[in-house]
Length: 315
Image (tube, rainbow, N blue to C red; front, side, top):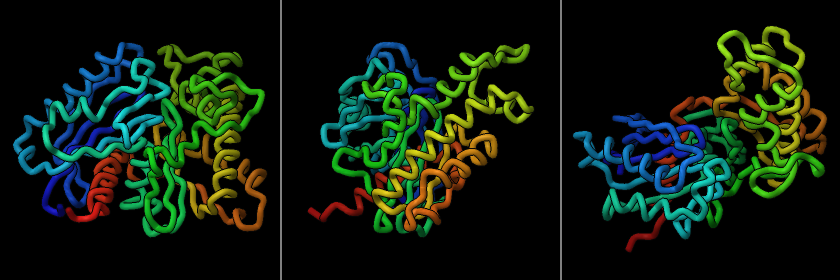
């Protein structure tokens, strides 16, 4: 498959992106639509079809040999369905069947978006060459994927490493997933912004209430904005430390929109990790920014697709 292409989809609560990806991880052509987050499932699927229609019109579509999907989760890779916490219109939605209606006989691989990000970072990013790593997407939601034994480990349903729904506050706020005090409920971009607003932070003249605006305010010295990022960092640190204690990861890689806050997030995260990662075998754990950037989901969906196809026994 070195000279062939993979059609990759990256589906999240904010955007649905697609690209044709070559064997070196380069994006040949791309398409993007906003996620109609609060719309019914049919409208969300229509946006996916629009992306696929644009991709299939590209001259290089004839070189596509497989389709890789990284989706916000949970996903069920065996059933081909998705139930993203941040896309309420999709519950047990038959995403793979819907994609196959457009792509025909091409093999389709589905993994969680965190697994896709782990595949990208292990292939070309900060986890390259690592034996054990946790790679995280901190954005509209919080997802994750694991590298174990030097290979991306998706698990039976494609959700392994989904750190966003580890509970780190047993009496915390209810999470849309049904649990309480999840990492995502504290550390995702919308929840960082919500907490800052609840604490009295007010946006500037432009009215931007995003996590990026909160990060800018924290950088400028706003104590409420800084406290919201501190709380998010502690939640992430607790989840990372728990994962490290369980499977002995050597590095945690953090990407996604919230990670672009830089040291506003990473400085308190490293401090908090020192409080939670106290066992001798996790004390050397490093936390670093992702290196594959905004295309990580697409590159990772393609990488996971290629890995799984190459791992299948020959017929």
